[in-house]
Structure formats: structure tokens, C-alpha cells
Length: 400
Image 1: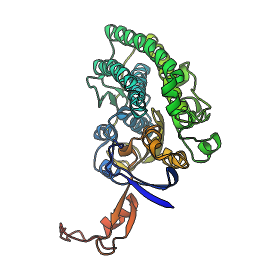
Image 2: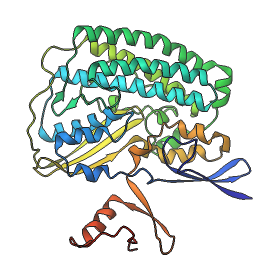
Image 3: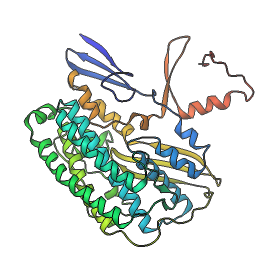
Image 4: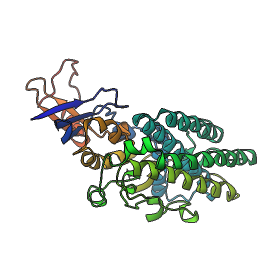
């Protein structure tokens, strides 16, 4: 006999609100329905009312953990529209922060993985080391969370020799500890026994479902924008795309620890090879009419920003495709045929940033109880259809 188990939108296993409805037979999951919309904030619509500079700070607030990823992806697109070539020193500093953010994100996730697997000492160690990265980011940018280092045409702050030395010192400490974590993550018997064979996703499924980031790499798919379509300084850096072939949560742990070690290599290369010169160039107030697509390898995978300019000082349209949204179809396959007890571990393994991925909202009719998913285009159409002088009532029922 089949039963449906609702998980969320509010649940102790979820860090952000999302609804997972599992169809189970006994302990085995036979069907999965993911429902979004509980964190919808209308960021893309807000962007149309802000100028180019204000939108840098708005883009940062799409996500707290990968704030620099969204700000950088947005700035890259705007610089394409404005035909700007930021100074090389500014680019090195920008992508130095990118790799430090990747280190921070992966250390945070490794702690979450340890906690979900019942390995809390692993959680404590990785989150202790996360403080080293956050201190370095605060030293470079002035902030521990939303770094605000980006500006159109470069970066806002320079690096001095003392800061460079501290970055290298911090990376040396982190490398030594991460090598130990790699040993633990790949060989500690109780930890491996809990995560091996859980959340299976074959290479063929990962490709067919367009999985991205560590989820795809753990299934043997070596996709990485920094290698496939090198942007900024990545064609000048030596690094490897990290993959695994276990196709499970264990592989996703291994890939992230490998990526930590590669990020340390790139950070050292950028600090030691930091070119002389300015850190930013002057940007115009307005962008010429046109369109730009910006791709960026965020810690969770490929981040995409589409930007359309109409010649004014603000975008006509901003569309964000966060990596978590790309990994939802793969998550359904990873959960299917798994066990109920594995749900928190499997879902955590994609490192979901739910607020990043929210681009729709679910409406429930007060009259019929019928649910419908409404996209941004439909919300805009309904908003324009309302007469400009129509009174807005708090208890008004949406006209279905």
C-alpha cells in the first residue's frame, strides 16, 4: 500500500522552506513531488526598478552563502553590455574572492554533511576552519557575509603586501587540514558506510537531467564553466576539474574536498601573480541597448544571469538561473528508490540554496482550493491587467 508523506515547507530537516511530497511503500520512496514558491521574493522584478550599481547589492542578496557568485555573474554581464575591460589586477582580486567564497561554501557544506550523517566531530572541525576563511574575506572586503567588493569595471578595494601574506598563511593552514578531511571523508568506516550507495545518480541520468556542479561531477561528468568557457583570469590559472565515479553522496563529499585543494592552488597563484596597476576602470551611467548572458561557476554549479538593457540606467530585464534550480530534476531521481531515513542526507547533498532558485509562486484559490503555479511572466500580466486606479483590498480574492 502506498502512502504520501509531506515534508515541509517547515520541517527540522530543511534549512529553508520547500515542500517535498514523498510517495512511499513501506520504507521505500516510489515517487517524489517538489513544490517551490515559499521563498519567492520577486528579486528579478525589483531589479527593473534599480540602477546598475544598486543592482550589484541586490544581486548579492539573492543568496547569503554565494553572494559574491551572483554579484560577479551580474557584473560580468553588465561589463559585456558596457564593453568594459576591467584592469587585470582588479580581476585577480575579484576571482581571488570567488575562490575564497568557494572554500567557505564547501567547508560549510562538509559540516552539514557530517551532521546529517551523525558525524558531528567532522561538523565541528570544518566549521572551525570556516572561520579562517571568513576572517580572510573580512580582511580583504570589509565584510564577512555580503562582501560588496565588486563594482562595474573592477573592484572597490586593493590588496597590500601584509594582506597577501595573511592569505597565503591561512591557505597553508587550510590545505593541511583539508588533506586530513579528504582522508576522513574517503576512508572513515562509519562515515563511509552511512553515505556510500545513498542518493544514486548515474552518469547518463546526470547528463540527461542537466545536473550541475558537484552533483554532476560526482557522477563522472566533468563540467565546469571555468574550463569549458574560461572567463576573466581562469585561462591563466592551472587547476583540474574534480570528478568522482561513485555516483552517490560519498562522491559528492569527495568532489567538494578535491575542489577545496584546487581552490587553494588557484588562490596561491593569484596572490603570488597579482599584477601591478589599477583595480577598476570608469563605467558609464547607462548601458547601450542589448542583451548579455553571463556564466559563472558558483560553488553549487553553473550560475547564469541574462540581462537586457534598453539604453537607460537600469535593466529592462534580469533573469537568474541558479544552480540549485538546475539540480532539482536530478534530486527527484536521487530520492526515488531510496529510504525515508535518507531524505535529509540526499537533499542536503545537492547543497540546496532554495531562496536562490525561487522564481515561481504557488497560489491557492480561496474559492475552489485549487493550486496553480504562477510564473513571473503571469504575475506581470495580471499586474498590468489591473486598472491603475483600482483599489487594493487586503481581503481580495485572486480572480481565477
